[in-house]
Length: 104
Image (cartoon, rainbow, N blue to C red; front, side, top):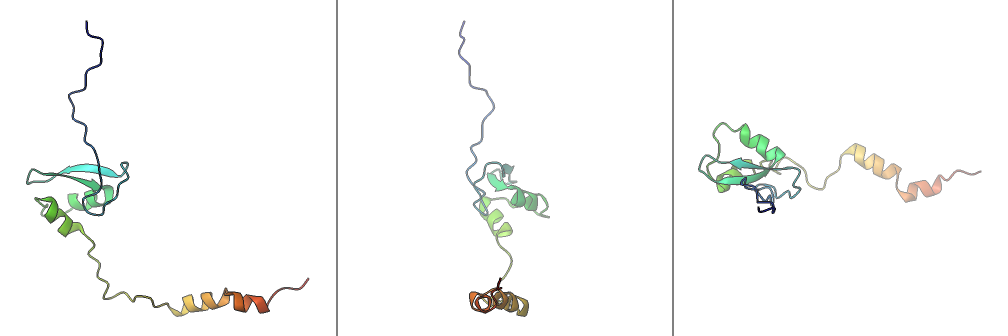
């Protein structure tokens, strides 16, 4: 009688990284079957987005294109602060605080 444990017949899927964002934490990753027959590894956020798509992607390339970063930077100002940020920065700089040291 053979007492060695046999490998289970269920295939184990080795998760690598999210096909869209590259997240590598295995606790976040799931395998998703695409209608074209391919399988893709996705993080939880992109898996949710994929499940809510009106027309699911058939390939990993289509999936990446559909779920990639869609926010444009043309409306966002780069490197500019607002008035509150300027006041907070001025209030906590060393130059201002050096003159207002408490005595005593």
